[in-house]
Amino acid sequence: MRITGGVWRSRRLRGPAKDSTVRPTPDSMRERAFAVLGESIAGARFLDLFAGTGAVGLEALSRGAAAAVFVERHRGTAGVLRANCAAFDLGEDRARVVVQPAVAAVAALARRGERFDLAWADPPFGSWEDGLEALTKAFATGLLAPGAVACLECPERARVDGLLPDHLEVFRDLKGGASRVLLIRRFNVAR
Image (cartoon, rainbow, N blue to C red; front, side, top):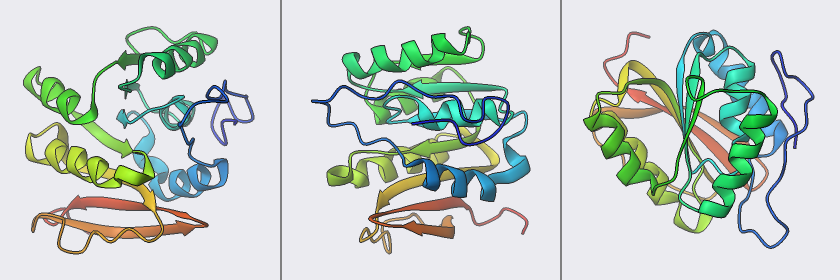
C-alpha cells in the first residue's frame, strides 16, 4: 500500500497483519475517488470511518486536508493506524484516532459539535450497510457540514436504492473490480 498523490506520493504504509480481516482500499480506487473529489480536499476536515490502516485519511492529508479523524473499532488495527500516522509525524491536531464503532463515534463527535467537510466509510463488505448507516447518521446529526460529500466503499453488487433518506443522493458511482465508491450529498447542494 502506498499514498497515490499529494506531498507524500509513493510513500509506503504499514499494512494489516496477515491474519487480519482488514481489506484496504486498493490504491487505484483511492486514486480515482480522490481525483473526483479534487479541490474539495484542500483545507477540509476529513472523517475516515472503518479506517483500518488509515490509508484513505492519510491520502486526504497528503492531498491537502487540514485534519483527519480516524475511527476504527478494533484495537489491534488501531495500533497499525497509529503507527502509520506516527510515520508521517502527525500530531493529534492533524490526525486523531478514535477507537469505537463507527455509528457510536458519529454520535459522540456530533455531540461535541465537531464538523467535517468530507467523510469516507469503508466497512467490511459483508456488512456494508453499517457504513451507509454511519454516513446517514453523520448527515442527520449535522456532523457533516453543509455542502459535505460522503463516500461509501461497498461491494460492486451493493444496491442502495430505497436505503438512502429522501434528502440524500448518490451523485457519482465509481466502479472498479469487485468494489465501488458511491459519492453521496444532500439534494439541496447547488450543482
